[in-house]
Image (tube, rainbow, N blue to C red; front, side, top):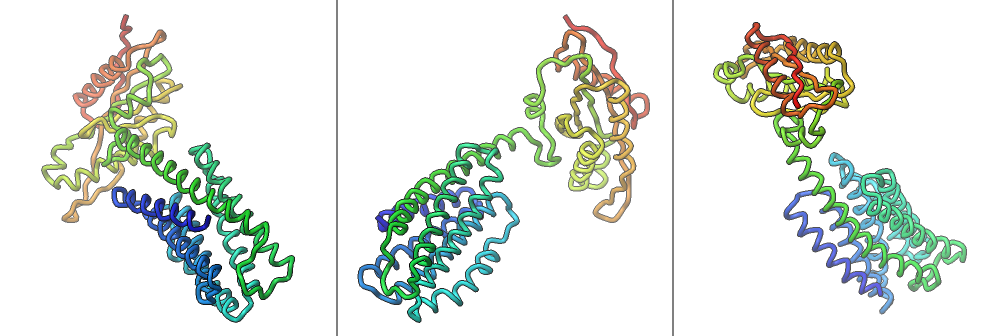
Length: 376
């Protein structure tokens, strides 16, 4: 059965490496390396069980926790891209390798196996806790992974407890008891099921990432026009408003300082929108130097106040060109509200656009409101 699990592990390992070749998620390498160590552990354990080769037993004792440490580290990496896989593995592996394998080689294989199973169980339980904390992101897949990691961790803990309870400090052969048999079954289930669920979670995340990419503007980090449309209904009511912004004399910024500085100006305005607009209101870059906020449950006074805060914060930012020249930019804004019976959002945006150009004609760096025209 263990050799069958090893073959299944090889297939999963190759699958993860193949996926890594198209999407360089570092956690996939960690997971594949971890499974690789476990596959080597299985073969070493098989040689130890077949011929009683001490070197094979020592190697099997050394390889198992290292493999699980890589898998646990890859779980952490999946949720935190900045997590250092190698640092964790080394912090776990070095102390363990200095203690357990030498004990095994010295004839205290029972003690070494207790340490091996205790460390393996701890790492698996910690991995299960990581998945449990994020299970709402994908309830079935992450919930299943939580269960598999915790179940597998419990089975390894039982193996160690049985040896400990029997006082088998020096065994001389692979343990043979009910806990070991149960552990083999659960390990095969966890390897196959955990690998499949890990791939499922990865594909779900890639799909969400692709969807987010299609809905967002890469330069500003705001929604794009398509994303804004999907975030709002087709009709706006009297307590809902559209605020359109346009950067003043933006072409001159590009012509004078270059497009790299112009891109930074766009990012700075997006920051002003995020910092001084309401968190719940969708914010978008519609294209070029044009931006929008769609507000809900807002009064005309509040909408105007928010727009003015964004303009003031942006105008107060001092910017620096590539040559060290300091300058400031301003923007103009136009506001339009929906209707009591609902108005098509494109009509509301057209009125906001008219108000925006009225602000431009009036001298720029100001907010103007568009008059309400009911559309039948």
